[in-house]
Structure formats: structure tokens, C-alpha cells
Image (cartoon, rainbow, N blue to C red; front, side, top):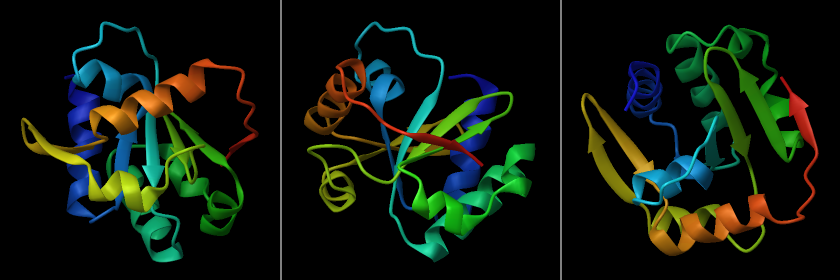
Length: 141
């Protein structure tokens, strides 16, 4: 895993951010050969958790995090932090609630970090939705 990704996941863990990795990178970590260019995080949609996310992203070097309004993050279906890495923060995924994803996630060690990885069933569901004709509105924060 790239250094930037390891730093991101280590900062998320240090700040106790409740997230589950979904989408393309989750599929790759489950062994599916797939190209992906971003990190998709399903986030527990609470104001304290979004504040911790912004602090973690800032520590990880995301300059866009310093411009983020936590209330706008909570109001958008997808909030994008686009720096050296692109991180899409999802508050909802069709067919998957955060509570279900959290209850079945895998805490996978990755160097100095821990990745909160969606279970195979959850990750596949998210990837299918993102690759289909689902429409989402994204807000850059």
C-alpha cells in the first residue's frame, strides 16, 4: 500500500474516525484485480465524527480539509477531498447502512495503520452500485 494511503489510514485511526472503506480499493484489498483512483469511505454521519475526519485529513496533509465545513459535509451525499489522494466521503450507499457495514467490517493491519475494510458482501454491493447507473451529487468541500 502506498505511503500516502498508509498515512491516511493511520491518521483516521489516531483520530478515532468511524468509517468503513468501500468501493474499488476495498475490492482490491479483497483480491479483485481492479484499477481505482480514489478512496471511498462510508462514514458514520455524526457531527463529532465528521470533525474527527477533518482533523485526521488535516494531519494527513489534505489541504482541502482545512477549508471544509463539517455541516456541508453532513449535508452532501458525497464530499470530495481532492489533494495528492482523492477521498470521497459517503454518508449513504444504496443497500448498505453504516451500522451494517460497521458491524461486519474487518480491521485489517496495514503497516503502521489499520484499515476498516467493508466485508466482502458490503464491498461488492458498494462497488456494483458505483459502477452501475446510480447517480450521486457530489460536493467539493
